[in-house]
Amino acid sequence: MKKIISFFTILFLGFIYLSAQTVQPTELPLAVQSNFKIKFPDASNAKWTKVNDTYEVSFINKEVNTEALYSDKGEWKETSWEIPLEYTPQTIKTYIATYYPKYKIKEVELEEVYPSSEKLYAVNIAKKKEKIELYFKVSGEFVKLETNKPKDNNKK
Image (cartoon, rainbow, N blue to C red; front, side, top):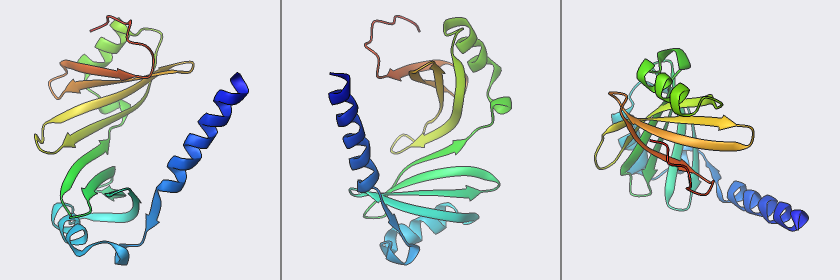
């Protein structure tokens, strides 16, 4: 049974990998190019991929690792900025230490998503193979969690 699950997991990951296509800047729709340059005029080292109808770009903006998503029509969908752990608000670190004491923080990002443009911290934490993504308002208030584990966890 484990072999079958492993096979399908590898197959699925391979499909995801193959479905993301590297795109050269000259191959981008003009609306995507234009809107990216307007929103991020200081961007450098942009690397583009396309998954289905979404263009994803990873780049450096004002010395910060940044990612953004655009529709094939050039509409901005999301931006996320990598946040070093030392710049993560103490309220978030305290929350995680209190409710998830055996977990380690793996990654912190600040995300802004269309249409609300509300910024949220997305904090990836892990304990062995278990991974959870916690979301917090900029104020540090907990919003929600996402996990692949069954939702029998009543933590807030």
